[in-house]
Image 1 (spheres, protein in one colour):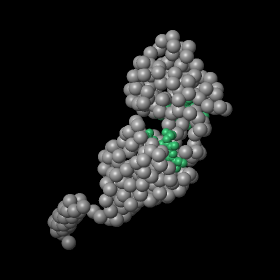
Image 2 (cartoon, rainbow, N blue to C red):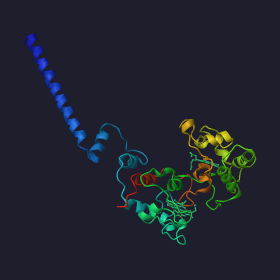
Image 3 (cartoon, rainbow, N blue to C red):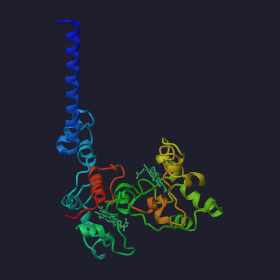
Image 4 (cartoon, helix red, strand yellow):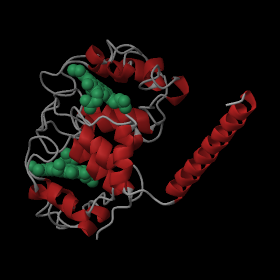
Length: 292
Ligand code: HEC
Ligand code: HEC
């Protein structure tokens, strides 16, 4: 073969390869336009090493949550009716099964889809989540994820002790760094047994803006620390989670955490806060809480 022929042949081969590549590209584009089935997308992600379905709850995270699979209400109904659905304890509907506050705590009916959306009917009547929104910081999300503080405090401790009322009044009246704060409020966070018998002071676990040693980088030993909020290192000072909203105890993390018991009552605080069923329930709410 002459040199010239060889070059021509090589040129031809290169042209063929280019054409093949272009047509493969066109195929890919066509594939992208056609929605892939869940199954196809899943296997493609496996092949590309994008997902790992090993380890705790990975299947729920990878196959359900990350793919935003529509959660049917029938599954939610089952969760509300099952013991141990979110960590050990009785089923939600044992205590919340009707809009009659004489028969159901807070007149909250978790046994029907409409009841869940309506929320508590006893005063103060209120919704417990907003369909279409992440419920993590709404009443339902808080009750499933947040342990009451101080960590380990019994469910039996009243929600309106003198200490709790003092904190509430301070927040409601503007949460100032005044003499009352220094002499009456701050010591509550730094003294044992204030919020329940045999409970450690808040400052045993929240004493610095660093974790470790301080849970959630929350410092309850000074006015500045309290107003800075939680996770100021992890999220940055400007995005720290505020735990005091002056004027609004009900919106303030500190007040919520000392008055709201985690559900179901008596659940051990060491039980996982992001149980897969909690995540599935949240996903259902974010998808609009469909009742079909
Ligand atoms: C053994 C009874 C019992 C069980 C089981 C139970 N709860 Fe409760 N729940 C209560 C009581 C009592 C209250 C009111 C006292 C309080 O605020 O802690 C309450 C309050 C609530 C509230 C607050 C409503 C409001 O208006 O502030 C929510 C939300 C809630 N429960 C959800 C649940 C969910 C979800 C489950 C299932 C995981 C559940 N509960 C299981 C007894 C129960
Ligand atoms: C024995 C350790 C311990 C004690 C004592 C304790 N906490 Fe906590 N705190 C925790 C842990 C762990 C968390 C993580 C969330 C959870 O478990 O619900 C937390 C979370 C919080 C949060 C949420 C922070 C955020 O990210 O939004 C607040 C607010 C809080 N605690 C306030 C208090 C207050 C007020 C007291 C005292 C009444 C207190 N804590 C006592 C361990 C403790």
